[in-house]
Image (cartoon, rainbow, N blue to C red; front, side, top):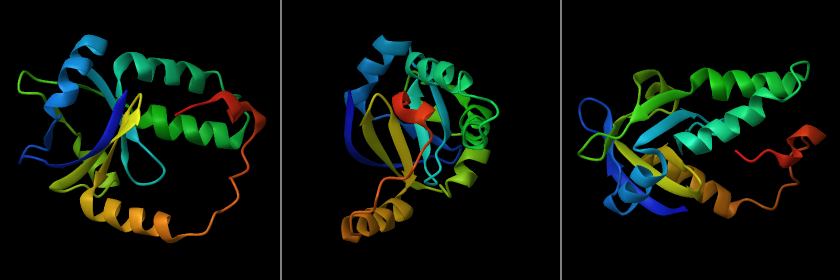
Length: 151
């Protein structure tokens, strides 16, 4: 399980060093093979390859005539990019994905159990404040097919 908030910097090539406390687990779980894709909250999702393949199988099985399902498939699968952790524990965040998430230099890596979220540091700080201050909103109404889907 990945947990915790980790402030990091990207290098000039757009690489991010995975914190050392996660590297061994990532190496054991997927031999350093990860998949990065976009999230609707303007961050990136970073999955160990086996975790991503499980999500991808569920996404592919969603009903193609459901507009929300197709949109989710296009966004998540369409932007999914494989990236390998190098010997120094770094991964490359592809330029189109960095652009989408407005990631430049300072990022925050957020452990989310089976995956990480990668946020632009400034956007993360603003959203965190927003979430802490907002009232409880009703859960977004989703189709029944999404009930068992965990992203």
